Length: 271
Image (cartoon, rainbow, N blue to C red; front, top):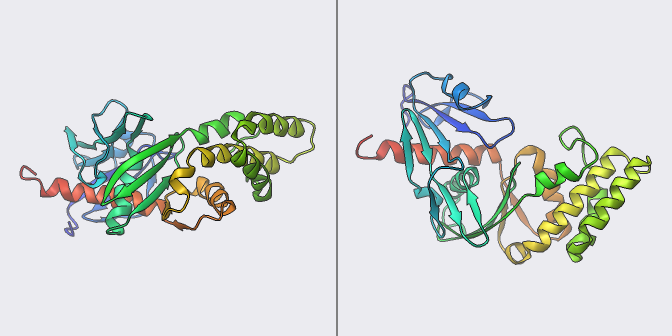
């Protein structure tokens, strides 16, 4: 894996925008490149192997299972790492499984709960003996996008406003719709700034998520693997519950997961 002529591509479709690393052995050739999709990622190194996470149609391995040993499915030069799945409550981890695999490869014998916020789904994963034992999945970011009166990707949420609604909805999840309506009306009458409105929407949505995931984060060893745009709201929400959390470099965890999978691919008998 240290051979500089061993060129391959790591493609992360779940990031916004999708990104790819051109790899030389276990080392990236530079920073990740924003790409439109798999075809553009493949063009970064023609004829070289491309490693990516599962899509919605790829076979999945049922929990409990280790994300570091998932099957790798080949189609031409594209190699897809299988997903993890759970029946009740239903959940499917593709990119999140890869990030968790990366974290566990860098933190041996780590047990606890890993929170992996995503642009489509946030996953809370209970880890024991290098396996994902069970998960909860939340569509929190899509909820914030749908409920916020301002563009969540162009506005910085006010941290104090986030805390206001967070505490109320965490203790009373049934207040989610009530607080959201209040925020939208106050913003429409220019009583709230864009940042305060977005902060309150984030607080309400995260309050509902934390209330539902309480059994996962309460009293647990907790790690957060969040892309930069989502890290601040989640960190603020967890701080509001006085939960000690280990922050990670999400890009590093993602890349470590792909490196782990590529090393397994190279070590396979028919590689």
